[in-house]
Length: 80
Image (cartoon, rainbow, N blue to C red; front, side, top):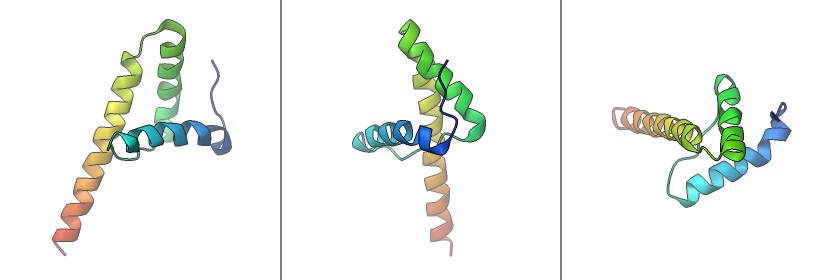
């Protein structure tokens, strides 16, 4: 399996992922350190086996987390 080990290796992957999310009207997401291995394994599974379900599930989880963070920040601003 090929994984991106340094931030500069991951940058093109992160940029492409987030560009597509933004084009779809979804929030920018960050793959945290503890989510990197599952993220890259899901990409590999999609490429090798044609099974996109793990990738879709992981990106959906990341999007949900980003939306939750945006809503929490919005709530904090309104209560000031």
